Length: 434
Image (tube, rainbow, N blue to C red; front, side, top):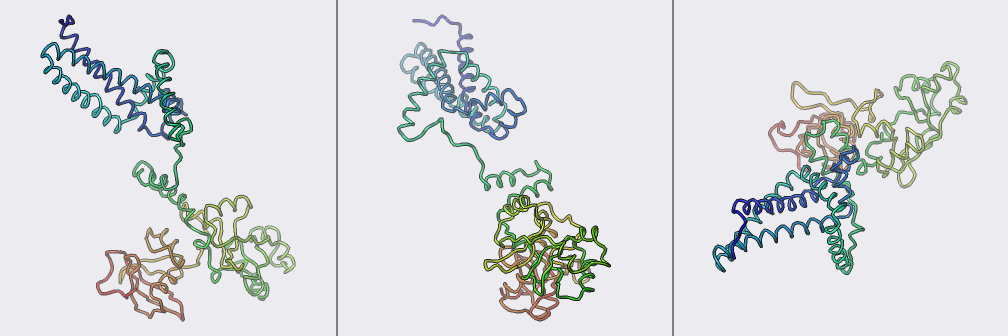
């Protein structure tokens, strides 16, 4: 039996089958590898290929069925034709060689190469394949019926294994996965925008206690003070909202909105009764409340200032909406800093930075782009005392996450001023053991 087809046409047909195999293998990988979120975005903008691909991926069992049906049909035709040609040319030995040759060609050109290309650059191939498979499933009835039967049998087996393809899990991102995506975005996002998005994701890991003004640093009005002192506090505090209390902040009476007071009343004629009548009700929040939840609570309650309480109901400090927002976008308010501490300043003579030890560690990290530990005490003074386990003397040195810290000023039980040198800029000599 001879082959009447011209050799050129025969080789051309084999090349066509090999190309079809590469197409089906590549589009399968491309459609399964394409970024689902970018796909959804492009589909929303009206991209035709993206819309087809998104619709096909809603039923992956049908999509895989039609791809494998077409791919196996082409591969079997290619292998069979090569075997027939080899048998005609070389007999049984030639058929064996032809089988090996067909397998190698299919692996290289029909599987590995197109699938690798599709895995690296899935979009273009996925959209091209989506057009083809959309047309195939919609208009080619014989193939559609064959795929439907195959899908029914396949789904029946999967049902026996306790799996339902039509109820596939959605591609919802967890917080950790979203954080990983942002970390890997690199230069695709502007630095400031990338920084803000990372801070938003971290809000759930930061509590109200981390951003509050500690009780001892709260500036407020004590109704038991002289009236002249109260008026002086209103005029010169620099804050738009002041807590009002009697003798101690735990006996809080309310919150004074200074701008509203000045707009409605002349300070020269202000009386204690009028002052108390203008107070807002105090708003309390637990100290362990995550910032993402507190942001929502501020919005729902239409509050901007909260008194932070511990498990016993004692006031530990004050948290403001401005302080919370600064955790996301950085410093922007013109009011005094939350801690009332001076900003770090460069020591041009001895090197390093002179820092007020009462500064909040998280604020210090944010403003100076440092990486001091934030999983312990909230202030630099507390962090130093926690590391040393004792009240240090002037001149004591220690290391915090690679930052060399030298105690410059101590008053009573409190470290007041320190010098901090950045990693790699620390002076030689051993640090205190911590």
